[in-house]
Amino acid sequence: MKERYPDVTIETICRLLIPPIQLFALYVIAHGHYSPGGGFQGGCILGASFIMMFIAYDIGEVKRKMQEKLNTILCSTGVLIFAGIGLICLILGANYLDYGILHNILPVHQAKARALGTLGIEIGVGIAVTSVMVSIFLNIATAGEHEGEP
Amino acid sequence: MITAFSLFLFAIGIFFFFTATVGLLRMPDFYCRMQATGKGDTMGAFLTVTALALYNLHYGFTLSAVLVSLKIMFIAVFIFVANPTATHAIAKAGMDCGFEPWTRERRAE
Image (cartoon, rainbow over all chains, first blue to last red; front, side, top):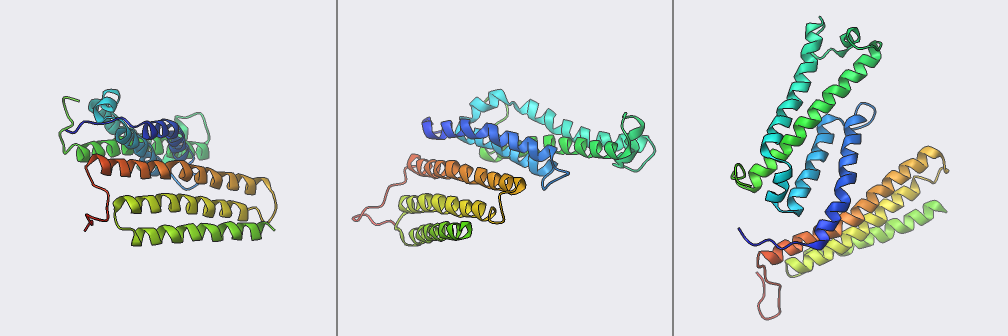
């Protein structure tokens, strides 16, 4: 691999821009049921901020902070949250992902339980999409050789 | 008055986009095209989005309209910071890969 020269401009701008981008991604995830957005879009923005970090800094350096093992665990956790909320609804006697029934176990009334269920689903989707985006980028950028030695 | 001013900004923005497109089509090599599109697109997008934010206020300065204009201005500032950096990064990547600039003697293909 070629020697990499650090660049002050790119690294400074990334350090300035990445926190607002991640904050905006969390806003898109949390505000998804009132405005355009949701779990998938917010997760894509969050994943893009990590990809920007990978491009601006050395890949090995960032991978020490965000390891492949952690990434895989996050990916499956997101799917688990999604499927788990759906299955809880199924166990309580309603259809799959029918959040209205959640008011039996949450101390809120039915409409609020529906909103909370949607929020939980979107958080799960956001986590899964973020880690899958990072994983796809790593696999393409390093031609599948990123595992093991950083 | 606000409408006239936003139209004026819009016209200048369109002019910058036009120069960027001409530069993209007519410049001889990679670096010259990067220079033309980087500057022209940044200024054109900034002025156009600013004109939209101003035009949004032409019914009056209500709270919701001002908030929408502020959000549009956030987009403008983001473009103004991110676009030159992206141009710089692409030009630097080309330089790191050993891409030679165009000269009059050694014409690029």
